[in-house]
Length: 193
Image 1 (cartoon, rainbow, N blue to C red):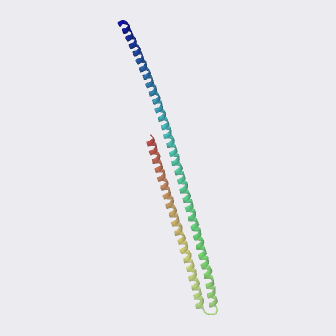
Image 2: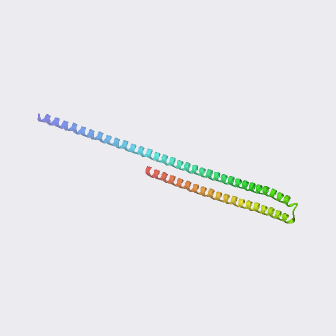
């Protein structure tokens, strides 16, 4: 009985040891499999994350380029509109100056004609006074045209200065926008990395 009992105990211990070894082998295999799957998933996640980061940086760079192009186009448009308005103002001013000089010459002519007609029956003094009146009238017309030309030149200079100021400010704002956009893109890429 003791021999059979000892044999059975030995058999049970062998079977138990075999089962323990089998369990440990299966457990080790499963652990290795889990670690491999986990490593693969980690690699996949890092690859996807790197791809998304690259995509975000590309989109950000594209948007920055688009913003700078739109800003440059708007600045060019503003400068063109400003130059057109300045040209229009100078043309209107020149037209008004020409109109004033024409009106002045037209008004001076009948004054001198009326004066000459009234002086005809009278003396040389009246003729001299008529000549003096026509000279004063011509001088005033010349003075008005000179003042008008000076004002037109002043208006065109002020308009050109304002256009230059607008274009400078627009270029500065575009540069500022592109710098902020580049900084934000760099910040996004740093956070993503």
